[in-house]
Each structure stands twice: as C-alpha cells, then as structure tokens.
Amino acid sequence: MRITDIISRDQMSLSFEVFPPKKETSYESVKTATEEIAELKPAFMSVTYGAGGGTSEYTLSIAKNLKDKYNVPMLAHLTCVSSDKDTISKKIKDLKDNGITNIMALRGDLTPELEKSDRSRWDYHHAVELIRELKDKGDFCIGAACYPEVHPESSCQRDDIKYLKEKVDAGVDFLTTQMIFDNNLFFNFMYKIREAGINVPVLPGIMPITNGNQVERAIKLSGAFMPQRFKAMVDKFGSNPAAMKQAGIAYATDQIIDLYANGITNVHVYSMNKPDIAKGIYDNLSDILWKSF
Ligand code: FAD
Image (cartoon, rainbow, N blue to C red; front, side, top):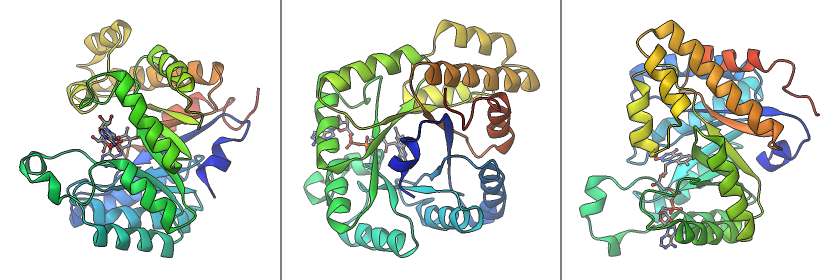
C-alpha cells in the first residue's frame, strides 16, 4: 500500500520509525522490538538506513519481516551519498523484488571521510539525484526529508526551501520532517513551503524524549529548538527514569494532539525501537486514533 493512500485517509493515525541493528548479534532483539511495535497496527512503519553502510544491510530484512508477518505497510529508507550507482541500482532492485514500494530517498550525512574526499568522484551529491533515479526505475511512492528549522548545511531557509521544491518537483510524493519539539515551528514552516508552491503532504516527526541523557544527543543530531517548557520538564524529571519516561510520553502525546487538532492526520513518531514508549503514546490516544472528527 502506498504511503500517500494511507495518509490521505480522513482518520487520525500514527506511524513509527525504527532502526535496524548495528551488529548481527543484536539482530534478534531489534527484530523482537520492531515486531512489538508492529503489533500496535500503526498506519505504517519506516526503517532507517545507515549512511556509511553500517546498518544498511539489515534495513530490507527488518522491513520485509514486518511486512510479511504483520502486514504493516513499510517505508524503507535509502541514502545515496556514500554509494555508487551500481550499489544503489542493486538496492532499488532488491527493494522492488521484495515488495517494498515506499522509499524514503535521502542523501545521508556527510561523514568526516566523505568531507575530505574528492567530490567530483561522487556518484551522488544530493537526494534529488536519487529521487530522479527512483522515478525512472519504477512505480515507487517516494518520501523525502524536510527541515522546519533549516538543514544545518543551508545558509538560509530560502535556499533550503528552494532545494526542497526541486526534490518535490523531481517526484517526491510526501515529506517527513526532522524532529520538532515546538509545533509552532512546524506550522510556520508549512505556511512558508505552501507559499513556495510545495503542496505534497508533510508528516511531522515527533521524538518522545523519555530519558534525560537523550536530550544532548537529540539536539546534536537534529539541531532542534527546545522550548522552555520542554527544558523545564527535563530539568525536573531528567534524573528519575520512571518519571522522565512518563513525562516524555505525555509531552509527545500533547504535541500529537495539538497537530491533530490543527488539521494533521498522520504523525510520524521516532520510536527509537522502544515498544513500551510506542504503546504508551498509543494508549494515550486510544479514543482518537483511527477516528475522524
Ligand atoms: P538533501 O536534500 O540533499 O539536502 C542536503 C543539503 O543540501 C541541504 O542543506 C539542502 O538545502 C542542500 N541541497 C539539496 N539539494 C541541493 C542542490 N541541488 N544543490 C545545492 N544544495 C542542495 N540519514 C541516514 O543516514 N539514514 C536514514 O535513514 C535517515 N533518515 C532520515 C529521515 C528523516 C525524516 C530525516 C529528516 C533525516 C534522515 N536522515 C537519515 C538524515 C539525512 O540523511 C541528513 O539530514 C542529511 O544531511 C541530508 O539528507 P537529505 O536527504 O535531506 O539531503
């Protein structure tokens, strides 16, 4: 099932992102965790892809297992910057052969090694090149990333939105945002991209922060703005794991309800492979999910 068909339904829904194992030894525990999340019957699940090749080999097997065993629609991430054309062609073929038709087309982060290497030798420089290739290679439903707080390499939001439009015009069917902790930033961004003529659906990405130690890493990875009420929550409860977990689930739930109340029907949750947190959010929304209002 295409992600665009799922998210166009007039019902409140959630989707979850999971990540594949880093090593073979953790494969079984990741498989179990992702299966427990699939048991919640989310609208769809996405599986990330390691930019440097580390975890990329397991993306397909985790996605295929969830699709075959739980019938959950799957979105496989694919990054291009550290790959050559042959590798990407093979990955696209493998996804297609295994019935994965939803692909999140990404550039991937620039590792220090890549930064030092000769760019003229790279087969891919930006996600738009991968999007064009996917468009040529089959009937994929294509997702791409967007950044309400501007991608860290962009000098200004105007350029970032200009390149985002280029990706959408190349064939993107929907966008998912970098994690946001302040919904106003999302609504502001929506206004700007609609003004720029970007009209595809946009899924807000919500990361439940349920552990005080996660905060620093989340900021480092995303550069996301932390509102004062979020910081106050972490200051107050960050040193008590049970309290922080409850508060973090409540904060994410509150953000999701606000998004639903303001016209968004599907929210993408960065589950961090934690079924208890996914379930906590699901339970909080039990009289809202799969309903239309
Ligand atoms: P691009 O769209 O190529 O943009 C990167 C930068 O280049 C931006 O500053 C943009 O403005 C600029 N740009 C774009 N096109 C052009 C152009 N034609 N000319 C000049 N400049 C241009 N990383 C992973 O490794 N694996 C994952 O599974 C993964 N999943 C993600 C999911 C989501 C929802 C998000 C938001 C990010 C994800 N990432 C993942 C991180 C992502 O790979 C990084 O943010 C990466 O730095 C940029 O990827 P992109 O696809 O947005 O790149």
